Amino acid sequence: MLDRFNAFLFRDETATGGEGALAGMTIGVKANIAVKGMPFHAGIGALKDRAADGDAAAVKALRAAGAIITGILNMEEGALGAKSDNPHFGPVHNPHRHGYSPGGSSGGSGAAVAAGLCDAALGTDTMGSVRIPAAHCGVYGFKPATGRVSQDGLEPADLSLDAIGPLARDLDTLERVARAMSDFGEDRIEGAGATLAGHGVEIHREVLRVFAKVVHDMDAEPEVASLSHPCSRIRFAGFIGVSQAMAAHLEGVAVSDHLAKLLTYGPKRSAEDREEDRAILQTTRDEVRAVVERHGFLVLPTVPNPPFPHAAQEPAAQADFTCLANIAGLPALSLPAGWTGDGLPIGVQIVGPEGAEAGLFALARTLDQQMGAYRPPQEGA
Image 1 (cartoon, rainbow, N blue to C red):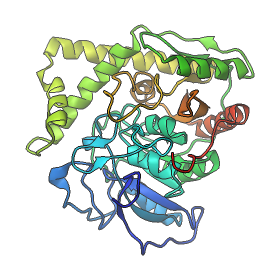
Image 2 (cartoon, rainbow, N blue to C red; image 1 turned 90 degrees about the vertical axis):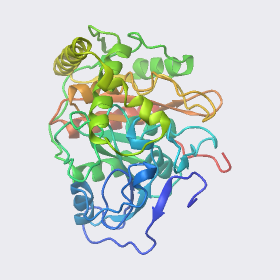
Image 3 (cartoon, one colour; image 1 turned 90 degrees about the horizontal axis):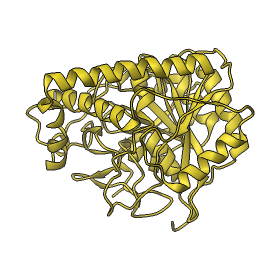
Image 4 (cartoon, one colour; image 1 turned 45 degrees about the vertical axis):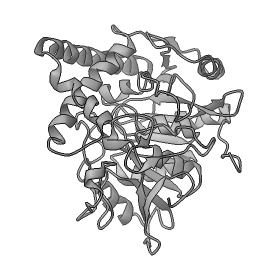
């Protein structure tokens, strides 16, 4: 174990950077993103000896901007799940409380950033896998719009939903990395926004308390949005698609019993039910985009539950809110919003229009100043 959080699986102690906007910045990379000469196993034990023969496009962009690529980060096996208790490489521990999940699937990325093991990290977000660990680890995470960041060099989950995105301990660092690696639009955001909470999702009382305060403190009273389908049904439709895509991609690769079971859901789905799933996803895409176009942005809880112990069962609803941005193909950003009574972080996310990434970050800064919720882990947590 390279650190007490089991966040890094490989570190290059000789890594150096160059000149540019990210000069001197240390960046860790999730194990499903290719870094030349480093492990590239996507958290799958059968692939543990595979090394990348080149850099992913996103990594190349960061190197070109002067960043120091320091190593490879632990993750959920195959990037399917939001707990980061990897059966082959061990669990990642939340820096705010040892023995607790950092979220996933980019759990190592969230933990490494929160613990100060690197300045920023790359994760991947298929239905929330950058923003969920950002929320659980009390840091900032950005999912670019679909197509605004290259997928070249990514071990995919579902390419129709996947996006490589950064995590950091502050918005300035997060934006610098996002600008270096993605197509970053400069439009501003107009409108008072809309909110979405509940909608078939059971939300923990502490999350509800924090989210209510966020909405109350916003400059203008946002509209309350609604969707045709419960978030739980939308998330399940997305999961079926991911399961089907991953089952095809990983055919013949040995995986754990847990992942193998998850990969059966998509292929065994009937054609009729799969058609219904696709219709739900299309309707949701259209509705979320319409809400953002009409109101400027959408504010939601990032995760409906606080961080939980690894010994507990993973809550099924963790991606119920985050999946909406992936399905809509829109940029989304999670930031610290508050804390539970016993000191665990809670996040809030903002979904904005494609091409208005600068506006999304500006809005996040306004909310961040109002909330003032970021704080580093306590020693010995």
